[in-house]
Image (cartoon, rainbow, N blue to C red; front, side, top):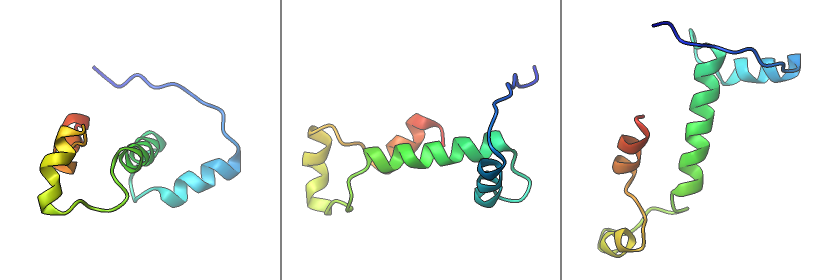
Length: 75
């Protein structure tokens, strides 16, 4: 089944920004999804990496390791 797409109106300046963030061959949908996924990771990950001895306590506090987060998000 083909992807269902929709049209959204954006200013030409916004389109140009998307093109600058894009990689060769990427469509706007892929660029936007990648930007959003990266932003989600920035919001949920701690600012500095944990020390190995702190990982156990972080898991108890509800933090998720990057590998597990990527698996959950499917990225």
